[in-house]
Image (cartoon, rainbow, N blue to C red; front, top):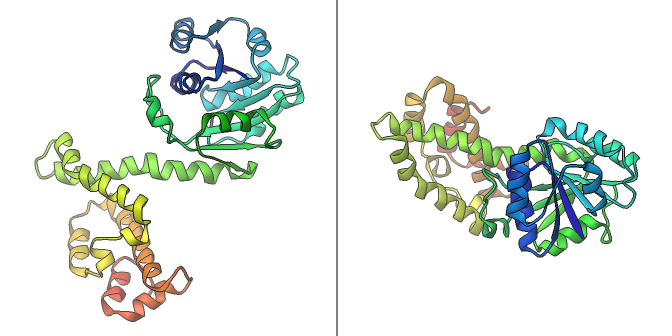
Length: 296
């Protein structure tokens, strides 16, 4: 098995380095920037391809790691060649594999192979990548397909998904990655209001962040619940609402409502009437529901 990459950026180079570390042959890179191509080839002990057809000829799997908005264009370019027996993939989590339909028309099997990881540069710690989940989407997924052989040879956990899943799948990643970053920024902002620098504020909150992540991994969401909403403690929530910036109030209420639902599920099971039972069981939770804008 030999893999060629189109796009010598941080995702392509990081994945190629990781694959090579797993003893997978990297044929090389094709792209627009000569300096980036040379660097990518050097980091992966592979070739610079100046001719797209040469990369296709020397690769069983062709992985497109370009920006999302030109994946279709790249597919059209490679579809000019015979792709029979080749697997053509992209690494976008938000776009289904059928964006590569022109490559499929030229004989290729097409897939989306998405690593659930935020790549910030080309020098990603390879040890980190050992724990990364991959998702695979495509019409011809089977134990004998090259992409599944690739996944199995990596040793990473992976799952397959349907072609209509891309929006919801990508949303999951964005919520826990990009939107969580925004929440951290909002939280540290309230400490910088008290005179701490942004670095000091994040350092102070970091043990809370990592402790919560570790608890969730060990015990799950419901058993990791702490804080005033989980306790039914109305007074702190009232005080929070009194000092929240206007732009943060709805975020606070919506997220707190979700915590209240998790508390209800912990106490009464994951049933559609668990929140109603929680509210009926205690006046304090009824007051919290009203405070957060729920119906009671």
